[in-house]
Length: 415
Image (spheres, rainbow, N blue to C red):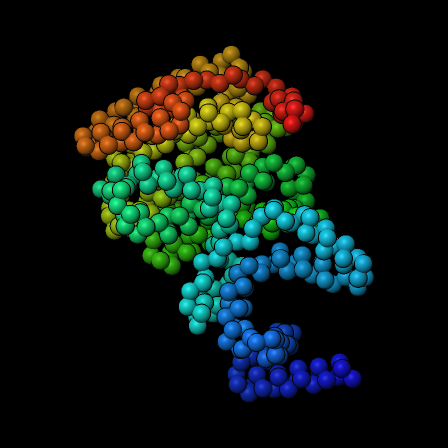
């Protein structure tokens, strides 16, 4: 009797919807789904009125991803109450603390949250972890690059006027970088399984499985769509996105090769280190676009070689951590290519060539800008503890790790 009553209500709602042109009759399942959704909306629920219910849905829809619904389906479609209780317990244990739901940019006017225009699965979203990790990069970018645009870093309005776009872009890139690192450190056979959908992922792996094919297609599509919608996407930014995509592919290739004791090429390593700072170039090009300025190619070239030296400096400082975490690191790569005795010599030669180009381009800058940038480099070097910094710090090669697998094993056993 109860089921018959539900069917009757559903049919009446379908007739009502069609009379108001709310739904077409081309897809019966879609029509029935919408009918039941509207019936749920008009059903009393505490003190919530219809407007509050609609606003609640608009606010929460971005967090209800297909992976969330997948987990909910597995959890609540069980017929056995005891089994369901076990699933709830296991779900809580596996998910708490692993990752936070994405923070969406779709809040605002509750009357129109863009639901008609946006497909939430395709929206560019960022999580809290990515925002926290991107913070130091954003600070360094503002302090080091604003001067090339004649902007005063000590004027808050200079920062906050452009911060939303710059911050969102860098956070999105960091989020994709985090995902790439997770893919790098998955066993090769598991990556293949996830790519083909041969096994049901659990915990964080469901997040990886949902996005793993992004790197096979276009990892920047969602971000590019957002920038284009705001009139900020340029051909040069698109080209830097391609550089980022190529860097991530090289990182996966090289780090996988190191873990599997395979050969790597010098060409791939050199290409990767040059591509690595693509996010700074994206931010800089965005700032030109936000300010309506023509791109200064001399500044871009100078900053590019400066970025390269900073990346090498960071790789020397982070060498042991990068070995433990299997991250791309130029010193790691050189040790594998030419051995521990030759690697420092090879790297020193590379640094000397880059410094020569840096000094040449530095002299071509406006004297005042040159002086300001050198002061900023001095600040950064002091803040970093004067360890292997450029251009005012000293280059120092850390103790080399000959057997990475043994080093990782010893480290884990000491914990």
